[in-house]
Image (tube, rainbow, N blue to C red; front, top):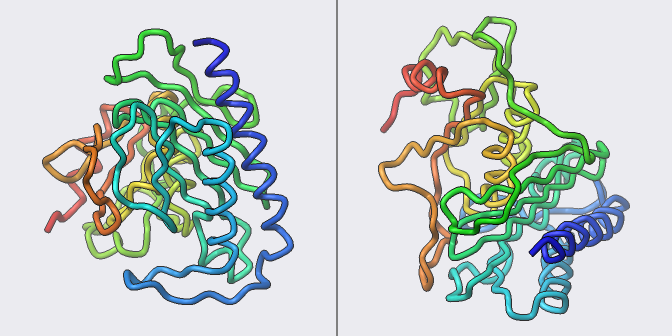
Length: 268
């Protein structure tokens, strides 16, 4: 399996670098249209999605694929890649340089490898996490540009950051104990907790392609992923359509802060 994981990492690095380099000339240059759920999509999203799906099918023909711009029904395969070909399309079209390409590899419905590449800022993140997948030979770890990362051990203070999506603002009680930041990219929101840059983050309506790659990195970095629904997110179920489903999520740097941050969230 060591050779397999090396090939998975090499593949993820190569294909996201290739896609990212091709997307950069379109950064702030393309027009977007609105999808049924209100999110934006561009020709760049579609091109990146097709390129990623084609590359995965060529390198790992037995693996299933679920992607934002393609098939949303989870396949009945041992392995499945979940793709977000351009996380942060609004930032991409408006000229804000935080957007990325996210890949998550799932084993029997549970993420075990994640890779997220942010071309404009030159940051790439990856992680391995066996969790409850049943795979015995994964050495957990989270990395940024090949350097190990870990969530912050800091105590809560008003000089620390907490990330939000725009749909989460109405759910927080005020005054809030941290400075609030809004980045516009779900995966980067999550991953900044893994790097130790912020103490927590919340997304009210992330989709499974926003989550799959970052979930592994967050868990491997020692942060805590809290589903704000009663049912766990993983494992995903074969045959189920995940296109319209959201997974309200709280990410916290360490377990001791979970109840602290949850006390500020007004759940519907």
